[in-house]
Image 1 (cartoon, one colour):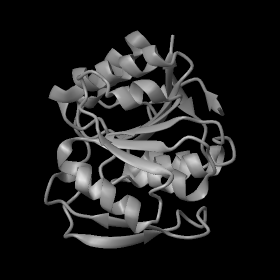
Image 2 (tube, rainbow, N blue to C red):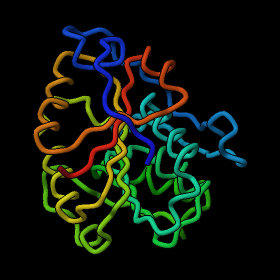
Image 3 (cartoon, rainbow, N blue to C red):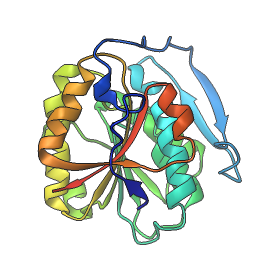
Amino acid sequence: MSARSRSSSPEFDPLAFDQDFTPLPEYKAATDTALDFDGLLPESLKLHQDLRTGCGGQLWPAGMTLAKHMLRYHGDKLQKARILEIGAGGGLVGLAVAKACSYETPMYITDQLEMEELMAHNITLNGLNDKVKSMILNWGEPLPEEIVALKPDTILAADCVYFEPAFPLLLQTLKDLLALEPNATVYFCFKKRRRADMQFLKAARKTFKITELEDEDRPVFSREGLFLYALTRK
């Protein structure tokens, strides 16, 4: 994993912002999108976006950033990986990885019940039923038996920091996952939208080692309030 210690520069430090500075994106109508992540995918990923069951049905900036990072820096390193995506929404990050990468153990993309139909639809839309399974995983609740058996060591989480009451639930799930597999890495990307978001990062630092990931696009996405980290067990 290519990583470096977090920069103390206010330009790139989410804790340096002490006020809300960016609004939530406007919702879009249901649509189908084809994505090649600036040529990182030889064959485009097809993604159906549909907000009828919640905002997770839309493509969000942190998902695009994390997907590109995984394709660019980890695409050839996942053959033995046991991959789990949490808060997957329509499955953007996990499906991009599945589209490009060879790995032996089927991946799980997970979210709440409301997203299950959309996740399953996008898996089928891309012909990835043999490589990806969708599942309900509610943060803060005991991990499903299938996830316990999987013992994921590569965990993808994009734009999971958006709703303050869910922060303790998300932290609990991350703790449970890293207790299950102490050598796991959580690839974690979020867009800082409000002051409360920094409280999640402060709380996470008490439990996890947090390392900012190197990425050639960092100067661009950092200006958009996006932050990309690896979370590991202390």
